[in-house]
Amino acid sequence: MPLNFTEESKPNSNSLGGNCFYNVGTISKATDTTNTPENKFEKDIAIQLEISIDGLEYPKTVTVAGDWKRDALGVITGWGGAFKVQKLLQACGVEGQTEDRENKQAGIKADSISSLIGKECAHLSFKKMDGKYKVWDQFFSVETTPQVIKNAFIKDQIRITAGGYNTNKPWKWDNGEQANPSPVATMNGAAAEGIPDFLR
Image 1 (cartoon, rainbow, N blue to C red):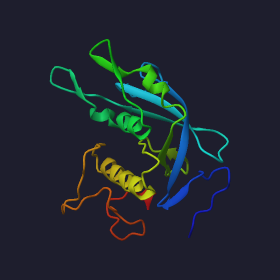
Image 2: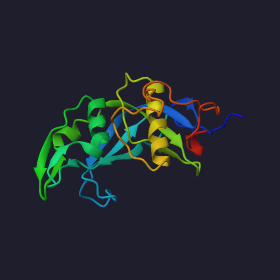
Image 3: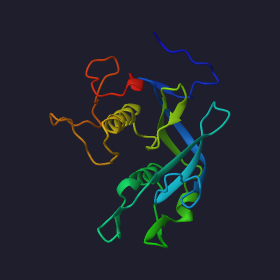
């Protein structure tokens, strides 16, 4: 039976099935929250976004955060878990310039963060078990097809459910088939093993 939503609660998006919704929005505010209480998980980089979506009265708020990849001495060697920030910058066509900070830290320059404002990006919202909607904290260019975004989201949720981790590296099923961007599962129960219940 199809789910029914009121105009107030339904995201302004295209339904992708499985409680997933495709959105294109414009970043109306971007704030470096790395050294603020908003960065509650104390990630190396944290950027809070407000995203305006046509048809919605209030912007969506989401924080994109992660930790740098480091060597045994703590020296930063790559994006690592901060790949979500990297993907956000790439999706918006913004060069991610960094700057050195104290205690072997590095941050995204203020100019790069402010350059996000006014940029369009595609993303996915989903309905949680408690009935509330949440914006997935990975962003894509507006040219990315909704199905590719959904496949990436399903892959991410399966890995989290299995106690895994997020990564931007290619990932394959045990049988060697590419999981993304090819369809990784269906939402009607066929080939849906491993998918979290709230996505069914």
